[in-house]
Amino acid sequence: MSYWDPLPAVRAAESGPLPAPDGGTWLPSPEYRGQWWNPRPDRWAERDWRNVPGPFYGAGTDTCWMGRLIAPAHVLYDDEWGAEFVYRQPRDAAQALALLGAIAQDPMVGYACDGDDHWTPELVRDWWRERGRVREWAAALDRTWSVSDRSEEREAAGGGREYVAYIDAGLAEDLRHYLFWLSEGRPAHPGEPLPTLSPHGS
Image (tube, rainbow, N blue to C red; front, top):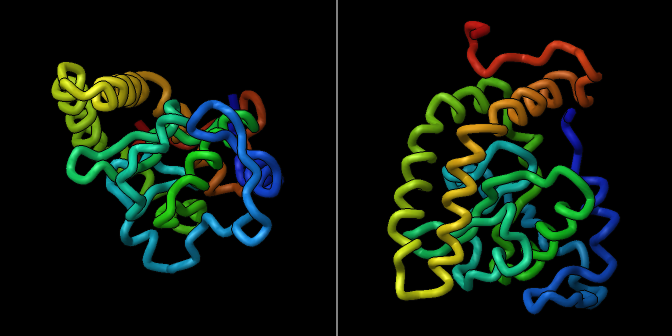
């Protein structure tokens, strides 16, 4: 599966009904539509180190634990403050809509979608080389929260397990496609050689 650019689908969905935490939908007021992307240039520098490379990332979000109520396949919470970050980028319109719904619930406007303007092949490879740090954190989160007295933490522990599994199988291929996207400005065609995650070609 080649890289899928989620931004057009997200922009198209901004004015329509968005997924709500209760499982239904809500229609944002016109004055708020499209206002969930913080234009502050320092958002990139403030991003959580656990964000997976891609266009979406969390940087100083709220700590209300709303994101996983809407987008559990994409959003996870840190274990310091409970702030949100993106551990899997959306791969289709339905997933993009779910992530947008989670983003729109953040009163701190702590999400951004300009990762493509900041990630470079070198930075992606640096992140991949240090992935063990992220994996170790996610595995420890699962061990701790899976036996928590809080149901919210036990639920979020599943996100930690999913992140570990994604790092172990699937993420490398997704990042190779993302490297191609960053380098060429388009998805790779079927059978087209993909960049490696090692600067030495291994």
